[in-house]
Image (cartoon, rainbow, N blue to C red; front, side, top):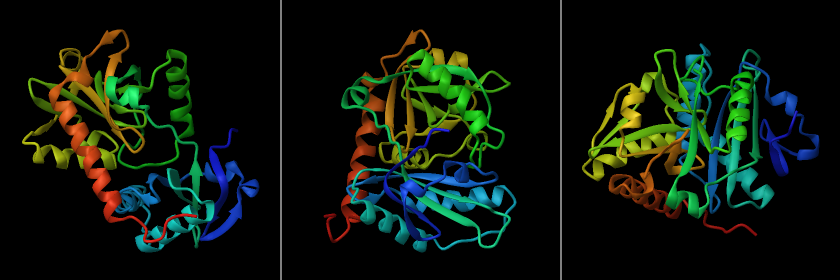
Length: 282
C-alpha cells in the first residue's frame, strides 16, 4: 500500500524513529481512532478540539480509555521540532485499543491545501451515494474511502459530497458542507455527520457576523436552489464550491460566504499569534 507518511521522523508511544522504519500496515489496524491536525507556523491548530473529538471517538466505540491531552500536545511539538517543520499536517492515531498500553502514533502525512486561486474562485465537487457506518467517530475506514477517492480523481474534482439513503446530502468525504440561501446558512444535523473542528468553529463565528445556521437535512432541491455552497475542513478551512457535478455556483462571490471565509482566516491568524512557540524552528 502507498505510504502517506512524510518527513524524517515519526513518534510511536512518545519515542522518535526514522520514517524508514515506518510500517504502513501497522496504522490501518482496526479498531482505531485518529485526528489530522494542521500545523501553521509551528502551531498545531485547534489541537484541544481535535483531542476532545478523539476522546469522543473512543467513547463512541465503547472504549473506556482516557488520555492526557497535554502530553499529546507535548508530543506534537516534539515531532514538529524533530523534523524542523513549520507548516504541514500531522496524523495522531491510536490503535491496539484492546491492549494495555495501546499504541499511539504521530506522523506527518501528505498534505494538500487549496491554492489562492481555489480559495478565491472555489472548487468543483461531485456527488456520490455513500454513508459513514459511524459518522460521529473518526476511525480508519479504508474500504469506505478508497472508492470515493477514485471517483474524485476520475472526475477531476476536489471533493465528493455524500448522499445517504434518504437522498440527502450529508457531508463531504473529508469535509463538512454548508448551503447559503437568501442570507441564511444551512448544514446537515450534527447527529448525521462527523462534526469537524472547522465546522464547529464556523458555527460559532457565524454568530459574530449576525448570522444563524439551521441544521436540517440538505435535500437536492435546497442545494440546487442555493445562492452558494462551501466546504469546511482542517486543510481547506472555508472553501467555496464553484460547481457540483454539472451545475455551476457563484459561491466565491456570495457576500455571506466571503464574510465567514474572511472571519475564519482572521480567527486562525489570531490563534496562531497567541500560541506561537517562543523559540522559532532552526
